[in-house]
Every structure is written in C-alpha cells, then in structure tokens.
Image (cartoon, rainbow over all chains, first blue to last red):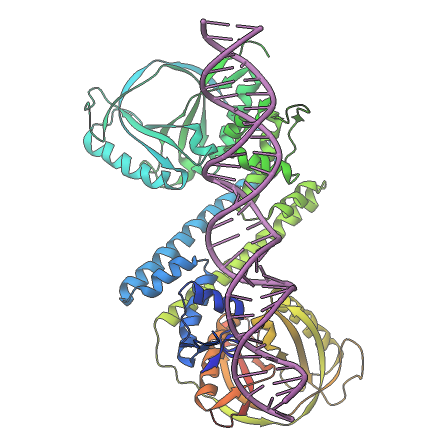
Length: 264
Length: 264
DNA sequence: CTGCACCCTCTCCCCGCGGGAGGGTCCAGC
DNA sequence: GCTGGACCCTCCCGCGGGGAGAGGGTGCAG
C-alpha cells in the first residue's frame, strides 16, 4: 500500500491530479481509509495511471478517458482511442491550414478581387435543410449532399444557403440544394423556392479553411460600394471535392445578398 | 462605420468574441460612442480581425496575440510567429510520442525489466544545479550541459539528479554533473559531493517521452521487493543525443535511491 | 509524547469563450 | 412624434483541468 504522495512519485503525477482523478472516478485508490479519508494505492495501479496520463497528454477530456477505461472490450476500446486520434489528425489538418492562411495574411499582396453584382431571380430547387451547429456542418453537409445525389438528377452545380447566425453565433439554419426541374414536394429532400435577391458575387479558389478571408474581402467591397449585407450567404460549388481531390483546384462562388443604403 | 453585429458577419467572429478582443486591447473599434458605449468598426479592420482569428486557431494566447500585434517591425513580428509555430511543432512531436507510448501501454507485453540493486559510494563531481519548473527543464539542461562541456574534460557519461518534487509539484531542484577529478570549487560549475546511496537501477531505452513508464516499472519492482524510494532520482546518460541522433538508440540508466522497510 | 511531514477538504484563480439577465439605444413604420 | 423590435451595453456564472493556498486532521520516528 502506497500513500498518495508515494504513488505520485512513482507515476510522475501530482498529488492534486491524483485526487482529481479519484473524484472524477478515473482512478479509484485501492483502499480509502474510512476514518481519515487517506487514499492508499497499490503498485498494480501504476499502468492504469500511466494510460490516463497518456490520454491526457493527447487532450482527451476526463469524461472521455472514463468512457475509454470503462469499456471492457479491448477492441472497442482501441476503437475509441482511434476515434480520438482521428480527431487529432483532423485538428492537425486545420492547424496546417491556419498556418498557411496566416502566412498569406501577413504577406499582404494586393489582391484583385473580381466582384460581380448579380440579380438572381427566384428559383425552385430540391433542397435539404436543417439547423446545425458550426462544428457539425461539414458532417451534415456530406450526408445531405449524398441524399440529394441519390434522389435527383444533377443538371447544375450544387449550392448552399448559410444563415449568418451560423458563423456569428456558432449555430444556424442551413440549406443545401441542387437545381432540378421537378423536386419532390415533401420529405427530407423537398422543393424550396429560393427568393429573388441581388447578390454580390465572387469566387473563392482553394479549400474552405480560409474562405472567411474571401468573405471579408467581399464584405469590404460591399461596404465600400455603399451597400449593406443581408440574409443568408449563398455558396455555389463550381468545382469541389466531388470533381477533383486537389483542394487547390476547387472553386466556390460565394454570394452575399445586398441592398442599397439610403445615404449614411 | 459598421456595428459590431455587421462586423461580426463580415469576419465570421461572434459578437461576444469581438467585445472580448476589445477588452483585451487586441482590436480597438474605430469609434466608440461615448454616450451609448456602442462599438463601431470600419471595413479596414477586417484583415486585422482575421489575423487575430488565425492566431487564435493556432491556440496563441490572447496576451501573445497582443504582443505580436504591437510589434511594429514586420520582421520581428514574423519571428514571434515563427516561435509559436516552432512551439506547435514541438507539441506535435510530444503528441506523436504520446500516441506510440499509449499504443505500447495498451498492448501490454510481459516486459522483462532488469533491475540491479547497486551500492553507490559518495562521489565528487563537477555540477550545475538550479531549481526549475518542469517545462523549462529541457532548455535548462542543454544550457547547463554546454557549460559543463566547456569547462571540464569528460572522463565518463554525464548524469543528473532530479528532485521528485519536480515531477509531482512541477517544480524542483535539479543537478546535472560530469565525473571529474578536480572540479572548480565555486561558480556556476562547481564541485559537489553526491552522497552514498543504495540505488535500484535499470536502463531506459529510447527517447525520454515515455521514461515515466520505465520509472513506473522500476517503482513497482522496488515496492514488490519491500523497499521504499527516497531522495532524488539519478539518471546517467549512457547514450544520448550527443552520441547519436537516433532516439531509438539512446540508453539512459535510471536509479532510484531505496531503503529497506522495517516490516509493514 | 511530540514534532513534523504528510494528508484531508474547501475555496478561489487561470484561460477563452458561451449563456443569460437586466437594461439602454437605434431606427423603420406608422 | 411614438412605438416596437432588433440591436447593443455591462455584469455574472458556467465549462475543464488543473494550480495555489487556507485551515485542520493523521501517521510515524525519534
């Protein structure tokens, strides 16, 4: 039997951290003295403590660590760990994208932004819509787009409408569509009539990680032309992952509904 | 002039976040109405907001973001950014190490640990010592070892003594040494007589990322042999980065001072 | 038996942001 | 001009994974 201090020395964890792990139910001491409350650990618990330590080094939240430890089947456990590793990989990807985007931002070259003011008539399309949180939007998008592809023909590039709330509040209404002559009236995929709007349109080239920069430039243009933005932004996926695996070749048309200001 | 909500739409930042950046002095609104407190931004501030956004995506703390933004010289600024990128790279390295270590931990193969009980006589060595925090220990170590190398001959492998507090409290007394016949009596590098101890000794093979596992196994061995650990651990760097760049070939002897328990 | 190192619980602090309360301000439509 | 509703303000609390310290109880060796 080891006191918490001795156990801390053997595992290179702090006494405080061990107490926290106990409180969280991650690492129950082998014995807890009922009278004094002293925690006593056994040497067999060292590997368990080290597994927790490693998972924490990988930024696995304590609750998820508990889930992993409580999974009896080693195979299912490995799956949970693999999930986390994949999440780390994904985050690494975003980090890389942020680095390149930052480098471009800090080396400000005069970007000539082609913006077109375009009046778009009301259109009826086959659409899938939902209210989602920002973190889920990619997952949701691929599911929704798969449904669209399964049900209808594809006479033109797909598009999406994204509530501004999605970005400013992290959660908002989203709609993806494909133009189609005769959409089904109801169901997950159903006909929607997009209202007529005047759009400020430009084209974003490349992956979507730094699309906010293009949005910013488009927004600047709109402001400088004494217009104001309104309504959900519209994206049209001219060239996307379905067309080529090379993100550098992707082309996304982004359009912001605008209206003329009286005079400020 | 844009209200905070409009500016949030243009930058894909939340209103709350913009207010926080203002409070932190990162992004001062172009104008703040004295009467109402309303913040008004200009379209020219969009790139600045995006730079902050990117830095935050790289987990740069707000205080460091401020430091970067306040650096007028673009070259020095790029240096600060590069520092952060290097830190990210370093962290990525540790993440990779944690992953491999975790995989080994979860695939528990019966490790045959060679532990030797060795009586070590008191020795006089040339040493550098300090009290450091855990995060700085690697940096401190390379500096200290460079000083040792500069001043004295190298008749044997270098070693270090690490207070257990360093690991359990994140901060502790550290001493690195080289055995030498005639150490200088004073100065940064000075003679120290290491006390005689009985050591439980084993050898850790590989990089130091998962050395705590070896420490744990050594600790288990000590506990199972009715001994107790005491005093600062001793490491001897038989093969290290100075000898070969391949971490898999590194060999570190780790020794834990022990004493016999009366009878528990 | 006494001193001292150790252990206990408790509360507060940190970061960066979200959520919500409670209240003021702007502006379009009437 | 008035009113309603969208917008904005400040202030406080929550999260997670600890660190720091207060204030008090325990265990053990001399």
